[in-house]
Image: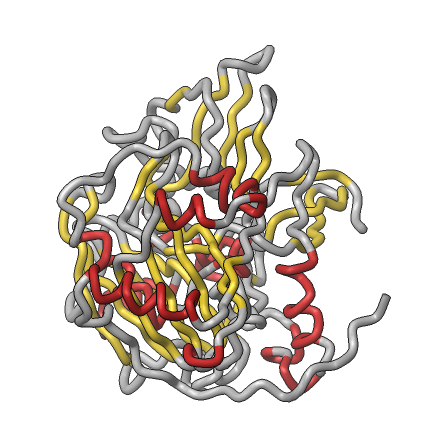
Length: 404
């Protein structure tokens, strides 16, 4: 069924936001007032039979406001795979809110905060849905894969989410929130459900809303050549006048202090999240500057970009010994995997690729204020490939042969 075209979605650069100054108690009181005024909790997961169980387990403690959306967050939790918040998304004026959507916001390997679309859990699978899907061709075969950018939360609230996480004195373990909040799908379910795809289809049905007419804003013109990156005109990061936010954080995986920069494109239609650690620099996310946000807390529109542009500083590169014979799984371009991480042996340093990408080199020179690390010798593979027998819920991108 063809989606009816939606209205033209406004694009504008919006300032980043900070968490509300309200105390956790005041946040809880404000949220309760919405329920008393008639707003209803509408969970997609197992809690839909008893929505109030979410408030008993995960009361709102933090508040973030962006555009016409209010994000209420529980205290941080973690399970064996991820750190996350149970979030309550309220769109429109709070005083008139009729629907409150519980969601799960988690931190990805790229250090980007995302809103999970669904989940799969069985004896064979343990996986968090990464949003809409796209069709790619690899070695002549069509594959349906997750388009992970579609779950990236607005870049304007990424630092605020980091602030809420740092406020936690401790992050307790929780293995039930995922099932309570997220809709569960069968083992082969890669696609999200209609409550995620519907708003996206309506927005994209209007050709005027498609960023760069739906074509990639950046691509590598030669396979396995990081120096061949080319941007569509106007979509290059504006390192001179486009740095609209700078923040800091820390990461054990990345070796300490991190610097985070939100940088808009020259035409102001797209924004990028750059992250620089002690050793690596990478683009964690890119998304349009559109102002329409759906019930999952993410934008209804996304951008098309070559996946290798968004390679994180450490990426999955491991030998799966559970297969017979053991198989190498890597999301780093062939020949560009560096040393295996001391913190997580399933990940390898992606610097041999990143340090040769022109936009990363330009970012180091113009924004970080220093030249690249001059570690630009010929690419080499990791001397030791880490092994991993388990498959975490957020590992990689789900793939399935055949296009739909």
